[in-house]
Image (tube, rainbow, N blue to C red; front, top):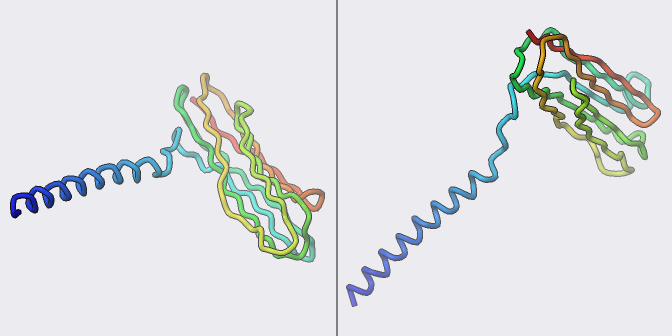
Length: 158
């Protein structure tokens, strides 16, 4: 009987170790993905409702003055912020980043009546320059026909 109990305990310990390894692999699979290139702060976008006596104010501020090298991958990252103050509704809030090669990342939020639809997030595009020069990206935001704003960021590739 003691022999069977000892075998059972060893089997449970082995199973526990095995499950720990499997669960460890599962945890690793859900970790955030690694950046696809060297990160560049591409700027900030914001839409704030009911401020400065207006239904909404849109602001886009891109960064400039970055430098880089041919053949290196860069991930342009733009932060966005939507402050829903629930005073206007029924509009679409659009945040968009267009990279130097035309690749676009976009987030559209429908502002519904009732719950706070506010959101904070980021947009990104990855791009690898193949020749020297000055390259640009465009960031823009809008709330339907209430407001809109855009700016241009740049990077010099040597």
